[in-house]
Length: 182
Image (cartoon, rainbow, N blue to C red; front, top):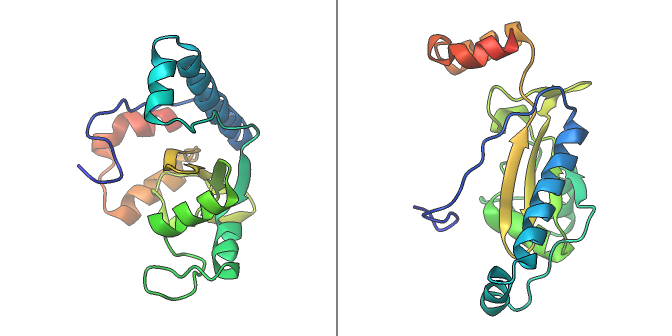
């Protein structure tokens, strides 16, 4: 139980094979928009949505795509400090309040991408040409905050085994995950 999460919700953990990072972003956008469109088209549910949130509108496509590094610069430019009251810098985990302020100010859904390796899970694939960052995404929705997160997974077995070691995790309990990389 947290103030950011519902106590009951449906969680989808999907794995898609043979796609690119751009395919992942397109898939997530389609999934979210189609779900919202379906709910708003339902004659029983739509009136309830309007009653509970009269100003709700389905998000417009395409969603804005912004890198983590660009978000850090946006926060610096708008003088929004990190949790220590200092200007944001590369490597900071962007706090919920700063993330929400940025998203609400921009006023449209944002795919925030390419987070630093140090603040993401060890199994996330690094960006070709920039090993400092991962092929990862958080979808930020105005008035809500983060609603979806995802990433590409490492596909190099040796790199994955090194990740287990670096994190102090035995590979044995994750044989099924390791086998997928084989």
